[in-house]
Every structure is written in C-alpha cells, then in structure tokens.
Image 1 (cartoon, helix red, strand yellow):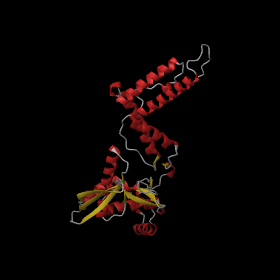
Image 2 (cartoon, one colour):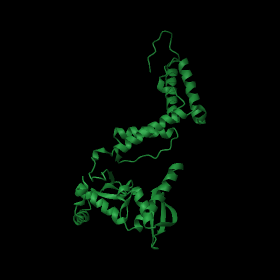
Image 3 (cartoon, helix red, strand yellow):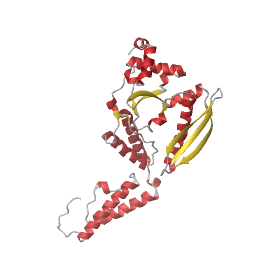
Image 4 (cartoon, one colour):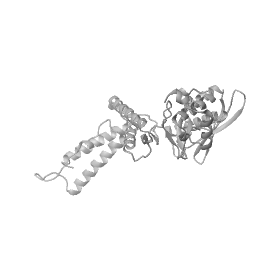
Length: 308
C-alpha cells in the first residue's frame, strides 16, 4: 500500500459510502486509511498515535475511541471534569461526571458497572472502571462524537475487536482472534492466571474476544512472573494457613507410610503450592487412608501392594 494509492482515494466518495453503509469493511484498504486519517485530522488528533481502533458491531466494521484518543481530546478541547457523583441502584454502581470545555459549555455523562457480590480489590477495580467510563464518555460527548469508548467495548455483547493494519488498511485475518472459552489456548491462560493469582501476583484478567498474539504474550508473561515468584518465595513468607496445610500433608504422608500406602509425587505438598492445591492433596490422602482403614489396616507380610 503506497502513499500515492491512499492519496488517490476520493474524499467525497469515501465519506458518502461510509455515511450510506456505516460499514468500513466496504471500503478498499486505501480508502480505509484515508478515512481514518481524515477523522483524525478533523479532530486535531495524530493518526500515528492510533487514537482509534476497529471493531465489528452488528455486522459492521466501525471505529471506537482508544484511551489515548480521549486523553488527547481532553487536552485539545480543554475539557475538564468539575465534579463526580456516585450512586448505586440494584447492585449497579453509577458515576456521573460533570464537566465543561474551554468555551464554558457544560455537559455530563455516566459510567456504570455491576458490583453486586464483589469485594475487596475486585470491588475497588470495578468502582474505578465506572469513574473512568464516566470521564471518557463525558469527553466524547463534549466533543460531539458518537464513538464507543474502549471501556465500553467489553460491555457490548456483539462487539468484536478487529485487527486492522493502520498503515495499509488491510484487515488482518480474523482467524487470529480468540473468541471461545473452549479454545485450548484460552483454557491454558485461565490455568496460568489462576496459578499466578494463587501466588499473590496481581493481574488484570483478559477478556474474550481478543487477538491470539495478545493472549499468548500475556500467558508467557505470567509464566515468567510465576517462575520469579516461586524463586523468591521463602518458607517464612508463607501464611499460617499454608504452613498448617503443609504440616497436615506431612502428617498424612507419615500415616500413609505406616499403612504402606504409596504416595505419588503429586500428593507430596511443597511450599510453592497454593493453599487450594495443598488442601486438595490432603483430601486425597485422607481418602486413601480411609479406604485402607476400612480394608483392615496394614496389609499382611508378602501381600502385593498395587500402585495408586
């Protein structure tokens, strides 16, 4: 895709087709790049900072405002938040942002998230997300824009982020988008995420759909964080609950030894294990001890002991 091809795109025809269809996928790659640049230029935004990204909504390819779009718009148009109001309705936390621009025009916008049954850090993150939504929506409204904000995309059930090369306008193969929680790469990510959280690593979970590359990169990052955390973890850092669970595991393994019950490696708890994993191992050891007790205790001399 050359600059000449992009420059040759007729601005009037491009705009007319977008207005009629509302679907950027009907444009050629060159026309898509031209339209993107014209939208940025009309708002005083630099297209090189990628202030907009693409999404498919109701079957149509369209733009949504990325985080740096609202940040730039707030500075360019002098939008300032004058006050915030919070309320809660049936488990929904609502933040109303009031603001004005450099010309003195005033406006307001709301951001809402569902917080019922949330506690601690999850509750705090949800409340901050509502405030962020309100501020970004206020900025877009003050600038007279009808674009979805990045914080709204995940709230739209039909919205799917689409990868488009901002330089060429080519739509990247959508097969690279992970959409289903049944995909092995997603299930692997969820497993690694759970292990990281169990080690006390603070992580913001990803949400579907998303690019496969983004998912695999985050998975690899978490794996490295887990390795680093395990290397740092010392026995004196363990919580009382984990220490107690480790002691129970040692006691149960000693009982198994007395009863000649084989204990595989995956039931021999280590300090780097999470509390839930240790507890599961202890439950399995108790089950095996209970079965041996019901069978009459220690097997007779010469009796063959089958592996577990």
